[in-house]
Each structure stands twice: as C-alpha cells, then as structure tokens.
Image 1 (spheres, rainbow, N blue to C red):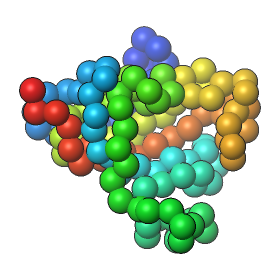
Image 2: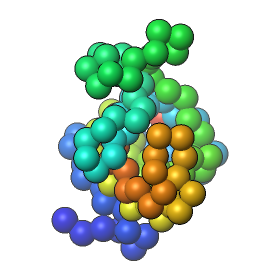
Image 3: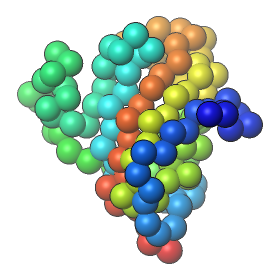
Image 4: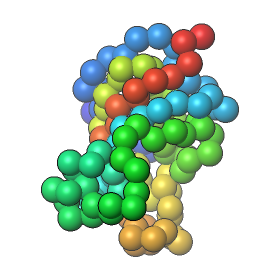
Length: 124
C-alpha cells in the first residue's frame, strides 16, 4: 500500500458507483474517526458511539452532511476518491488533519484513521 502524493493512505473496502464528488459537492457519509491507539474521537454511528463510550444523547446520529472542500485537507482528498456506496479506511497524517494545533480531543501532531461510507453523493 502506497500513500498518495500528499501522504494520505486510502484503503478501499467497497467500490462505489457513480461520479466522484468534487469540491463544493454536498454528500452524506457515515464515519468513525479514531486516533492511532484506537480511541474513537467522533462517529456518526450511534452503536459505535455507545461501544466506544463517546455517546451523547443530545447529538443526532446518522449520516452526516458534508461539503467537499470544507473539511480537513486529507478528508477532502479522500472523499473525491469515493462515490456513492463506497467504503474505505482513510489514514491521515497529522499534516493533512489538525497538524501542530490539534483540535478538541485530537492532540497536536496526531494522525487520524477514519472508516467512511458514502451514503449519498451527486450522480453527475
């Protein structure tokens, strides 16, 4: 497995169908984000949140709405490599995530691992 030119690792689990989203496209995804030690810091999947001990009853769970281009650089890049129905494991080096500043529960210089499923994407 080789990283992309930017350093992103993209491991396709299920191939999707249709067009790949581009910057500005609105898509719906299920995701679970973890640190390299397996700690879940965010998920759109209620059962995963409960299992990981990060469940918040005030939060709605289900596919999340994202606009490609408005996320951390590594996630923007990865989503343009997917289409509707695709599932992938995405490994973001810290430079493509929150880098030296970190963010919330993510310490500075932390690589992140995401399990992502594109639930809906433009069909152009």
